Image 1 (cartoon, rainbow, N blue to C red):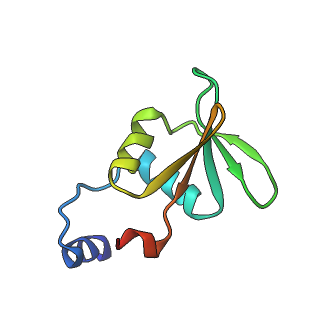
Image 2: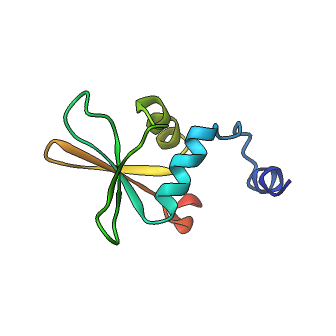
Image 3: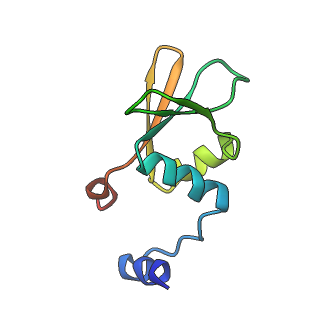
Length: 94
């Protein structure tokens, strides 16, 4: 119920997040960043506190593009590596 109320208050009619999108966004909001390097290597989740790397099994390029299109994550490229992070709550309102 809270989700529907939040969307109606902002005036957005976005479809619900899929399970994989929600899972990835939860990781990104709790201190992980998503990285992709060489083509075919797949996305990796890196914990910024202790530098643990986990393969993001539920995430693929389509999941990442969907979250970017909604404005929930943003990317930054460093050499051959692309890094995605969750937008801060204040950035959502812009």
